[in-house]
Length: 319
Image 1 (cartoon, rainbow, N blue to C red):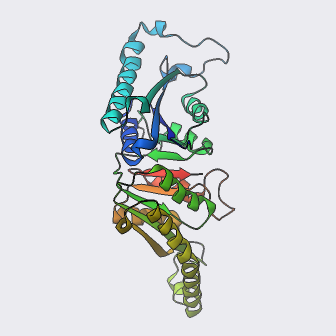
Image 2 (image 1 turned 180 degrees about the horizontal axis):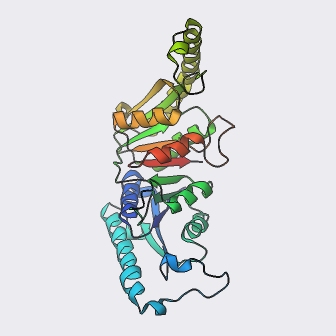
Image 3 (image 1 turned 30 degrees about the horizontal axis):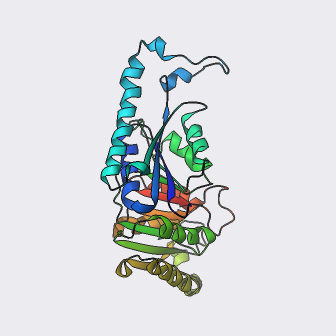
């Protein structure tokens, strides 16, 4: 991150979701320290025209569409990206703080965004689904590719039109979780109303995820579970208190910074999402990697599940 400002790349595709993603970023990030790049990868022809196109052959040109595609799609997308820029300026950003980059499709929309994201950006923001909202998919193909490939900068996947006034941090004292606290301190406006640091103390789950009333009633199992929870809570409380202190010292509202330990969930992602829904947190921030070495190479299991579950929320994946 630049000492003076953070560079934020927002992927724009002309969809309502990309507009919501841009406005969400404008409302949650520090106005004085943020510079936006609105990035549009422009298809000169409909995406389906690339199907079965022999490698190395010339792409089908707009002339073959008698100007229809340029008139109705390309110009529409450019109007949308200009409107987003205007909206960001209305949110308080200066003219110089919002630039537009429009690039023709080269190797693919997602891969072109990934290539651009490697040019020194501090944060990447994208909608979870683009124009293809009627396919039934809960996560768009482009968003999937960004999630699997962008591990060099924090990535924010925005679903729906989330509120930007409350942040829930999934915390387990790992480096990834501590980086979430640092990211919040660096990037997020102090005007948010509440921050909660949440540790989910999972059940021992001795029976591999299935609830067995006979097993659960055994005294030995109950004692082991109780000791397990007490141990984890006593180990985590100092880490949670330290994270709270860091955020309070950074200027966040003292009354709005809190921590919580959730107990006996089989899944950390389920616990975090339950807390987000119950307590009204539309922003959930997690580290890409937690303590478990069994996690995926680029995205931990908790982050992966949260992206799937958080259809109407903003999920921050912090590296």
